Amino acid sequence: MGTLIGHVAPGFAFFALGFWHLFNHIKLYSNQPNSYFSFPWFPTSRIRHLELFLIMIASSLSIAMELFIGPQRHQPFDLDGTIPSNHLHNFEHATISLTFLTYAAFAIVLDRIGSKRTQQQHSQLTQFIGSIAFAQQLLLFHLHSADHMGVEGQYHLLLQLVILVSLTTTLLSIGHPRSFLVSFVRSASILFQGAWLILMGYMLWTPGLIPKGCYINLEEGHQVVRCHGDKALHRAKSLVNLQFSWFLVGITIFSVSFYLVWDNVFAGDHQKVEYSTLITREEEEEEDDYDEDSDHHHHHDVESQNIRGKFTGNMGGGGKFATIDNMER
Image (cartoon, rainbow, N blue to C red):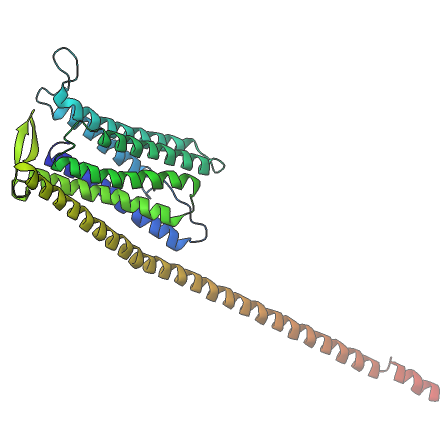
């Protein structure tokens, strides 16, 4: 990661994943509010496991970048086969990617071997594996071998808060799979992770965006932001805190507004379907009533004709009145 592209690329992946989940959870809840169920991933129409395949591809590329493409000698080990200190953070980032790769792979396996009877259990197990991925991410960023005291450390500290929200909501989804709010917050937190990583990439590795009184210094083959004195460092950290606060407000406004807009769209479509279905049912009921009335009138006409027939027959020569007339004669 320790570069601009190393933060922007995974940041874009997290942002896209969070956006995809936010959209699909809103759509699912708006269309089926009473039968809503939280899914750990969402299939697509053409390629069912596209989301999981993309996670596996992105994780594999991240591992390759950290361990083989990024290092100058295209391998992360020292001459004696040990891990050098300047490559420790590469292994930490690669381990995070490996955990998400494991999550995506098991999600595909559990989906393919599952049935309707085991669907809920496999979904909850997939959520649990996802929570392990977030727990691993939180642990390694908390114990990161990179700078903890400088400006980069402040960005990582605040990132851990967002990861903690993703971890907590993923665990809550196991016990509360029908809670839309839990899924909504989890999706927004994943989107927040992506936005924050993108911001880190630009703010820490763009010379024109470095806080006043600070500079980029090359240490052990990596560029690190350093500040002239405690006052400049305190100011730089305060600016990071402000950025996080502004991002928190911005992500909140975006997520809630996104929900309000799409809920109105999906709910309107759902009401149209229900309304058209209701009209169709009413028309069918009216047709049934009309058929019943027609049958009733037809039956009544037949009975009337039968009565008139009997009455006419009785008035003929073979009837009772003819017998009486003969008796009189």
